[in-house]
Length: 156
Image (spheres, rainbow, N blue to C red):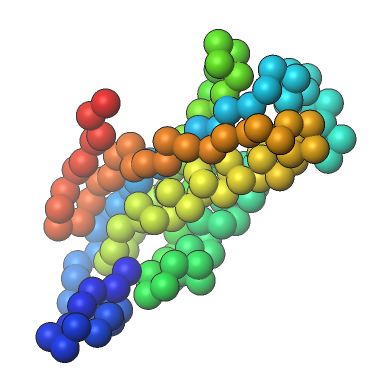
């Protein structure tokens, strides 16, 4: 990411002198939809195909391109990215949890958040013809490890 120099201009953070450490991050997003759209995803009957597999692949691919999407974000050599879905029938929502990992000089929080967000957007895209009221929200960092700031866990 960027920072502000002494003249007030944005510049890329220089990580040259930072030590490489093992770093992980978990991101979260949630998507709510109609009972019909939710049921069609559960039964794998959406015309565009397997929604959750498509969302998982899209999220992983997006995480790998975070440096191209967020200005001044360092391109990272991720060693692992994964996405899990928790189906919540009580309110027709899907909780999305992403995980990103590497050994490097900068954290993977943005990669985890991009992965979760893109998975949610992919679900939206695949079921928007069934439900126009879909809502995406609750995008936040669940946990991060490594680096100078250490271990962080979100307290809900």
